[in-house]
Length: 481
Image (cartoon, helix red, strand yellow):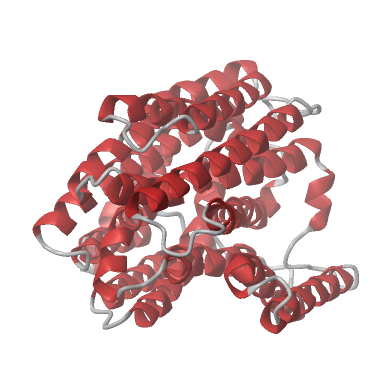
């Protein structure tokens, strides 16, 4: 078997299209992770009903996954720079697949959340190296196109997830959504072992910053945990205040130790590169704005409009379907004209989409919801690929792993903050709208939810507009970086 694999690998590596085989392998991981994420969002209302879990608890099915990824991405990016991307990437498939199987057999909500953390460890091993593998094997003139195709795979995973998830939840049960990762994970592992180049670990005796990794992980977990639970537990409660204190102190120690070590886990000097800094800031804000709706839309559709899981999945495909069409076009265009116009216009379209969603009512029809999701898909498609190309094309080759880890970290922190922000603002606004009502009627409850949803969408629109203004300042970018 090893001899056959080596023969196949040799044939592929001698092919002039070898870089595209690498892109296909990276796409398997991208598809699997986005498929799983989008499927879970559709299944959340069903899981909530089965285990009688409230929204504050239920958000941890998503938040624990993103929180773990956010804490470990720079760690695995740095480890991959030291030990080799192929090794870390291939093991990521196995860990993610094992976590998926254990999610499927979860007996309760907390076990499910725990196994989502295991999934996230595998996902962070994959995400920290995906962009680095592409950038390392594509010339500057092709990077936008390659990352644009990756954006299409993201969209296709997101597109398949809601539709497939709705069908699986409707015909079988929510557990089946995790089992589909088994064949994809095995295929990805085999492809990574056979196709990815045998990159050599660094030979200059660079060391891993264990102290920095410890402080960073502790700081991120503490801060994001506090942000996610501040509304439901009370911002002045001891756990939240303690988490904010420990998180802030740990990150302060992390930055302090960074100045004292020769090979830090996160090279903060990368943020002196203007396109890298601007791209990551706008990326963070874009995901905060986008995930506010990603978290709340399934509940609006299923609990307010009484759509079935299959109908929810079908409707939510409007966003990734549009993104799948726009991303490769935008990525190819960024190779020619640069990222500024594309990223800024993408954020403006996203803001328009969020404003449109703020006009939905308790009686909105199917066709009235779709335009908002289409606008979100167009905006995301215009923004993501040029932004990724801008960020990754301006860093030194030996920093691609850590740069990819930072970019993926920023993306996932944006998702965590977006979810926490949306849930906290929604619950706060709902409570304000129902103040003085001891026993609200069903009509009063759904009216309060929709009113709070409007507030979240308008706040998210403001965040997207701020990101658009920041995106205009990408000075220093060149397509030949």
